[in-house]
Amino acid sequence: MNHPFIRNHQFNAMRKITQQLQLATQSVSDPRVLASVRDHAQAQLAEVLPGAADVQKAHLERVAGLRTAEEFEEFLRTIESWRRPFPSVTEAQLKKLFPKVKKLKVPDLEAVDPHRVTYLSWTDIASGKMFLVYPLDGQWVGIEGRCTPVGRQGVCFLCNKGGEVGLFTAITKSRPAGASPDYYKAIGNYMCLHGDVCNKNITDVKVLEQFLHELVD
Image: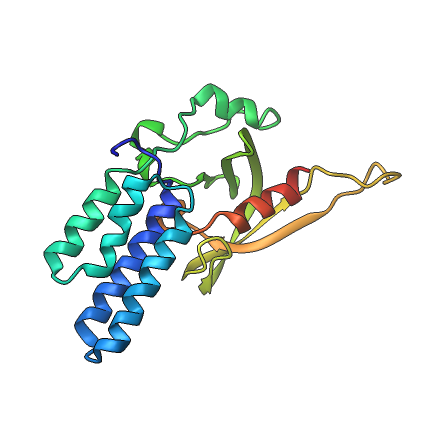
């Protein structure tokens, strides 16, 4: 039951669903509408964790019966105890992912809470480059790009939240057949300037993994 199996983005999604239901219980007076909202929340949780074991499903189904703030808090505490940490990665492994970057400055890994990380990212302020690391299809992938602050609020393509964003641009490693030696293709998207903020909000990794595949395949 307590074996960690929920990834950071899944927990974020489940917390969001639970908090929305709690808000509905405080603001919706029509019993039929509230019952529908409860059923919908239960179905959403099941979609987030389609492979949950029976005992885990039984706990998730309790969401439809939550009433008090204390019950919601206890429900989220249990889910949090199931959080699976981000795979362990060393400074040497990070440097190996970026062999062309001389004197790569890596983040303080001891200061990173692995239970709250979907992807690892950091910015080298001196060069203006952002580095992103993620276990894609079971293999570590490292992406180096340039992140230019836009100086205004925007929506991050990874977490779909509004906030302080920059235009992250990276060059793809794939080359079409017969391409000239000078060929390159850059892909850019607006994303959170601060990885900890994005990791707190991201609820799905489909867009992240698609983006990485476009860059490395």
